[in-house]
Image 1 (tube, rainbow, N blue to C red):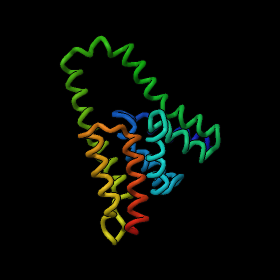
Image 2: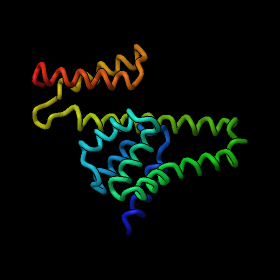
Image 3: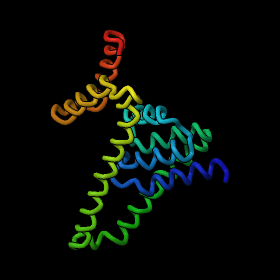
Image 4: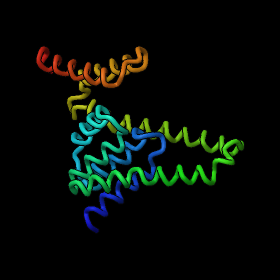
Length: 184
């Protein structure tokens, strides 16, 4: 199979299961991009997620564009991005045409309630996937600065409603301080 077709099909698969937003696709994206295709390492994937969060646009699109470019140049970035958005476009178009008249029925509400439960699970698995790479130091145990920064970020985002960019900048500064002042 050609590299371009491979890139398109991988991101088509990721796009097909993109219910719940970009974070819900992290476990599948990790499995495909890091474990199966080995296009990125765990560390590169984690860094890509951080960069994708900081740049404008959906995280899934930013990730697809970068990985597609890294693997197959400009054509790869275009095909990866197209593969990511095509399923959502077709699903929404189908819903608008065929399902919309039935959305008020109780069965539709029950189905969407079940889907929301699966989305929560997907986001939790994404949390576990990212935590495994960034919070653990192999045999040395927890990475204390990262754990502290993660907890602080949750507090700032959830309780104080900080903007994600502000939290990312604060986290970067705290990481630099912990390294240069404390040596950790």
